[in-house]
Length: 98
Image: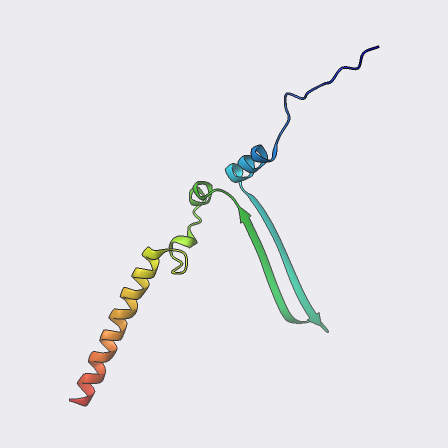
């Protein structure tokens, strides 16, 4: 009797799984609380979203575009805003001196 080797046509490799996760997105959430005598001393909320950039933007998530550490455009806007604020402050100080 000969043994047959059966190959699955529906086999899934890591790349396929990753593509599905990035396409659909996956959320992992958890809370850690430290209490003594029913008094909350520390609460840590952990939220993790794994998705492609396109999927995240489709869901309305784009915080990295406003983060000056991750976006040079956001950094420039932040620097412009800070520069305007400092100029106004300098003008007020100069007006007080005169």
